[in-house]
Picture 1 (cartoon, helix red, strand yellow):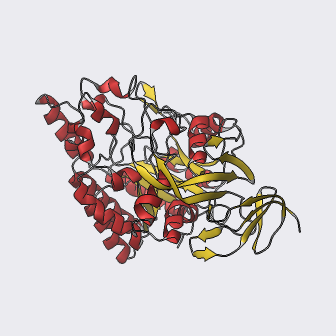
Picture 2 (picture 1 turned 135 degrees about the vertical axis):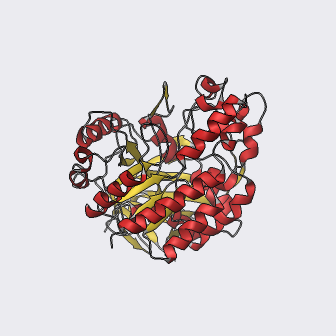
Picture 3 (picture 1 turned 135 degrees about the horizontal axis):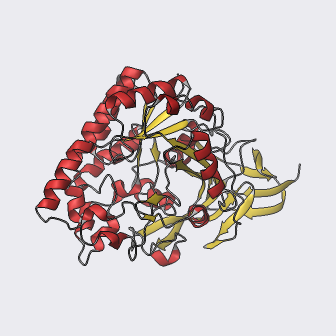
Length: 460
């Protein structure tokens, strides 16, 4: 058989190990993983790593926040993802009051179709436990939306314990999974009010208003409620050692809990918020950057399987014109960091090359496990015959100094400015087509498809 494209001579890395083989692509799918394949077009990947395309399970593109919106739209954000070796993103639907879940889903899909350059899925946000809302969840599962985002903080989004239990139960009965942003709302509101009243309004006080205990308490509570409901739970963007320990303990009890962390919690710390001239505002996100003493436990959780995935929580805002809306008080700074493009390379440099992560574990947390948990495997997250031809060719020795000017994100800074990386994507293939090569995006707006997701591997 002659293939449309063959990737030859590379080190094929999957979540299960390394394979000595070529990758044969026909149309939009992988057709063979064998030695000595031949194609009309060929890529010599000698010395390179050949990986399944990355899956970022947590991004916020074109997302309204108060009087502004995240600065990457569906084109610029997915372009940046592709240039960093990510070929699938999962974003969020946030229904407006009065909207049905179906109507909100269709609106969000319409924003992405025609702009997205890679395939995308959508989590549905649930902000209340009214019968009208809960009765629509089974229908959403039948439309390919199997994951539901909840919050234990933020006005207009937060659920109390009784409401959270109702959502857990309903989603479980429908075969889905609940995502939760777990921080203690009452404690945060109390601390914010005291700080502002005392005139403590600089960006550094954002972290003071959301101490580690507010995450640990809420994570512990969410796990307990998931255990009561016997429900599947995915805890987003964990940032503390205490939260990781709580997840590990719950998993040992048999709770179906999955944890996510983000590069910022592995590599940055709260000292960034102390930067002068309001520069600390660049690093305001929730949960906030923590003390560096939290990081070893997070790395350990990533290595030992307590943490299943690394998402980015990519939610970018320009420093000038957006972050500075909060110049008078940290409570008005739009919260979020860019990072969709640098995830794979950061985890390779600071995870694989330091010995914290094996190559297969790196692939697992950045691709295969997100695919399994969110109902995309083996269509995504795998290099197997029949899988989508989403492939990354990664040069493990390429030296790159991260700087905003080389990235494709639509924002005026990167929180990783000046980081020295060893290892970087050089080619990204999405649905059988090269969309990024040696620093240049060569894909097309509108080539990304909405993904109908199945029930994930978490279903008991």
